Image 1 (cartoon, helix red, strand yellow):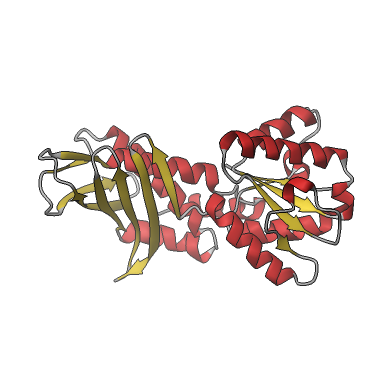
Image 2 (cartoon, helix red, strand yellow):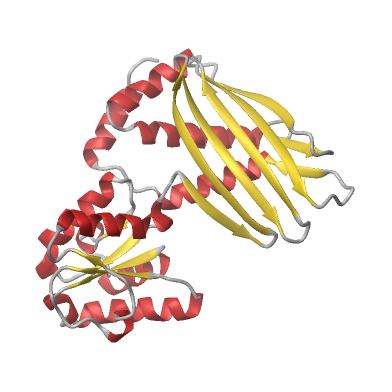
Length: 301
């Protein structure tokens, strides 16, 4: 889900500079001038964006605190915080101005004297809403914490996912590592994306294919944990047309109170939860990035 930016158009140059830095950190942002097109209902589109955003970035300046439109967006943020009982609004101070009452007890990213320090504080604040490499997914049973890393080892590209699932009902925790190792063909293609500065798009594309493979697999992608001893299972995702393949090795173990029962770890559900989160969080590629990505896609493997 994107981060909605509420601002006055009088501050658009500063806002675009801040948003540009967020985009370079792969943060998905929603700015009216970037999203709206001729014929759109401004009220409906903005309302949908505010309601669907993971957070609201409130740009505070002399111009914005006087704007009736900005006041309405701030009110919407207030109601969401009260309704959802969580932090939704993140204030950003551009210059000295009268801070709205609702925001006076909040820490803000201060851009008044030093852009770099303000940007650092802002990136820290938005990380919990926009980091596509780690998050916490909550469900009725408890929560699933996950993170991932990626790189090249012994000439092969890899993406590793680390997950810890906690179940209050079972009084147990489950630790799982999913290692995804590309073969030579897949590594060569991924490194072309990396060298073109669109490596994250290549990883996302491969992740989507992995999820599709997991959902179509004849043999269920799961592990049965019948003891505290770690269990492992391997899978191979292969594309016969290109020769690209990914070796998937899953390791999992259970910890906590032993209820005497076997526990099922559904790897497909893990993939689905992570990739759905990434799809909502990761920003859209720029036109230049999309052109680079398509150009590589059009070349032979």
